[in-house]
Length: 227
Picture 1 (cartoon, rainbow, N blue to C red):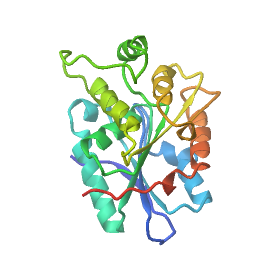
Picture 2: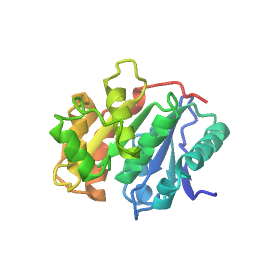
Picture 3: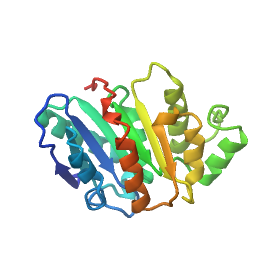
């Protein structure tokens, strides 16, 4: 199946460029990363980052086609541009898509920026909160297969693994109606890798959070991309 993508290459020809894959949430488009200042912020800072926005519809999550479609497009661009460093930024459900890719392709990604991430249904998040947070929570192995808790269980172990090469950054608005998942994850992250602000589940909030993340030079963290 073909994939709809928007590509903005960095004008900087320097070695060590990053391919930043941008995944929007449900009922949003890749073009939102361009119209809301996400790519502009990269260019204003003269960062050697190629920006690749990909339209993702909900059926791609449901039918399992998301990951092979993503992988094919990433390989195509990375090979053509000679890029060995991969990052993701995802908003809402797009953040879950980014985590799904990182889990499916261990060692492939330097880092991921999760903006107001959808991490699980409220049922799962409340279960985790009642267990004492992500650190204390252990999913029931007898529960039917659920991608949400599988990804969360992987993420919990990943951020606690000092040898992990995946750098996870989080940003969310404190008035976001879906903030519970972010607060649970924030408790596991180093202070310099999470930022929260007044705001809700919207682009003005995410654009401000993105600027704060970039001010912390996240792309300085380097990991060789696995093929």
